[in-house]
Image (cartoon, rainbow, N blue to C red; front, side):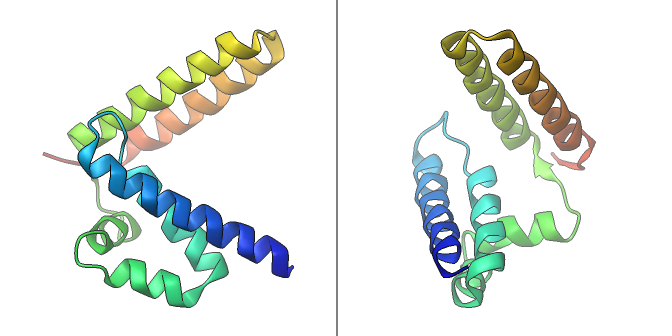
Length: 121
């Protein structure tokens, strides 16, 4: 189980890097990457998880989500647009009916889940 733990930690740090990059790059969403990092760290490293939730800029993202709070509407819309753009690109690149159906089902499920979350205006 040790090597799986390290892979989850690496995924967590990769998510933090992408999330921070998303602060400066308009099409790269910050929130989903920071939430993924929080999930990864919560299952692999209490030290890194505590660092993330205590961070003055990144911690409030995790705190708002964890407490059932909403997403800013611009963030929610950006998440959905980037997710669907990447899924459509994947569908076109893979060009298999089964993968398009699977990706469409996943995208629809995630979209419904995100749309049901409260929105911060």
